[in-house]
Length: 178
Image (cartoon, rainbow, N blue to C red):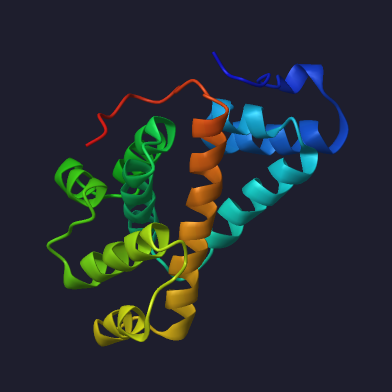
């Protein structure tokens, strides 16, 4: 049971209703996480806008989803782990790739470096060093991509914290935390 109400699009109006309508159109349903965040129109606008902005960035969707599952697993967020595993599969990643990413691993050196960096940021609460950034540059990420990776980390911390703190019920196929 969620610790806060899950807002129903039919029970709201204005900008909140419009945002929930956009989300419903994008997913074919309104995921519980967005219904929880919809208690604040400003928070919903921020979250949905961030997903849209990063979706149009230079980081491929599958890599963004792999970053999301690594962070979800680290933060014990069952909701995000389930959602982003499904979204990663939809973005073309294999089940094996998503499972490896959950543990912060990849056979691809570039993906492995991005996952390592993302987890270092989470574990260090942003306290990283020059070598962490250099590792990304060494595998071919430019500054734009490095900042986007950090933006993915920040967005996923937001979503993880919403789902864990508010006990949002998982409405995606479950994935076991490691």
